[in-house]
Image (cartoon, rainbow, N blue to C red; front, side, top):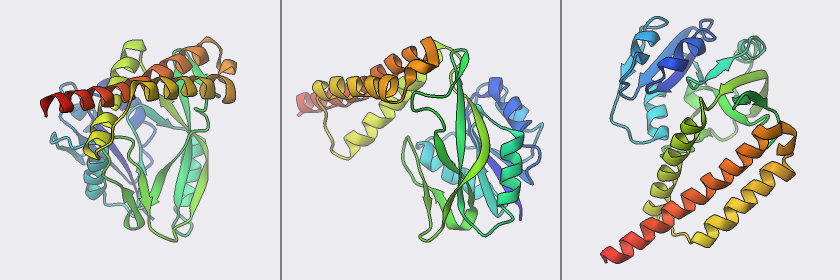
Length: 253
């Protein structure tokens, strides 16, 4: 059974080579670029000729659908540029594709602000990433897209970790968080949803308590405290963004 490792990327020159070096065992590597201004495409072509560009960004879900369509393998392994497939995970994947079709989840172990985060609700952070092309595919969500599997297709776990080098520094975290908050608010506003600032405050506080206390973020040291505070801020920000959109639309009417 053939497997295609599939990536959607944009301006990932600082990550991409190390990621692709952990995917050379795949039958095919597919890279769909969203209009990079750095050396992303040049690096990708060092590993594969299946490199395409589509800068008509319509959200993460649509872009993953486009990338899926470019893959020729019977199985798809969806990977992000800031992730690395460990040898144990590779072996587990190669064994899994010899079995009857199923959608497989991987456990992501994230490196953040100087350490691997093993608590805070971040680990094992299982996500579906390996699946038979004809029996599963991504939905069209702008952000937080999900893999939709065919009815009756089993979901199973793989062994081994997918290492996730999630944020380069605090500025990168804040920029990425702002992008997700904007996309979340846009999607909710398009659905006719509204929000209040009190919802932002209450959800933000609940996020902090869940991460730092219930999910034992305190065991991740100072990084755990920082992540809980930042996540609470990010949660508040997305509700605040939606609230601001509501106020603006009401004034325009």
